[in-house]
Length: 365
Image 1 (tube, rainbow, N blue to C red):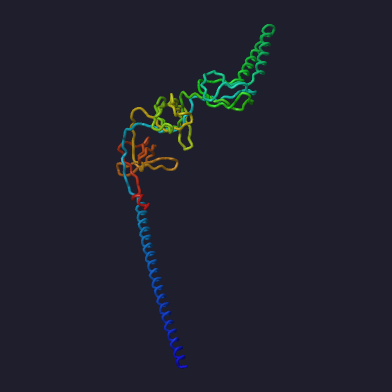
Image 2: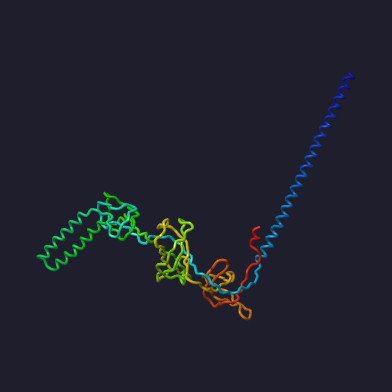
């Protein structure tokens, strides 16, 4: 019995020792996890604090830059005179010199079509016809009546029949389509056997492409440089690297008011003997070239203020140091320069204006 009790006591002691070891191991792991968690939170807090400090510094820098940009600085610029070659930028698309979109002026079945797309025609060539049986019969009947009236009728009756004959000949002519000029057939939308209804529209198109024309819009400021015969240089996307010569062929006496609120004139350009690769409907860009050089007054664009209604003003520095507002008419030249077209401003005048300090590019970083 004593041996059994001793054995049980030893087993109890061993269990207690193992339990204490397990508890110690668990406590150690728990302590390590706690330390690890504390370290992680410390790192996260340090990172967040660093980011906050960086963001605060960034916002502070932006605020400082914005304040610098909002400050205005008084500046001066001088009006000066320069010479330049006048060029007027133009753009548009080309059209045929002449275009005929023809249809019959009477109804009837089409008896013949004499041309196809691409055919070259001469002025007066017969292009197509509709049945003319009724018109021929009417003309013949009137001619017979006229012959009889000349023998037995009165002068008044003869005159009336002459008028009827003219009308009958015109009706007979309405059964044919003729070319109005030398050109090329670009569209045929009818065939023999079709029925044409008077007023149905054009069925044959003829164009004269021996030269091309274009209508370009010139604003009222640039019209002082434009005149008939003025040379132009045009470029087409269909002919890269090629400059096509043209000239101003018509300048109307009336202008119009454009949607942008300025006066414009629709000037006509002509291209004689257009090169291959340029056909009606193609778009172009280019410029008009004035002969000789022009002189103009120029100042910095920043010195010009344009208010409501499009009125532009500058502040002219007077002899006593004060500034006086002067209304001017200007033309923007690009590169921060404007031309002073009119106004009480002369070469050498000093203009004052205010501009914001700082560099706008700094606001982007």
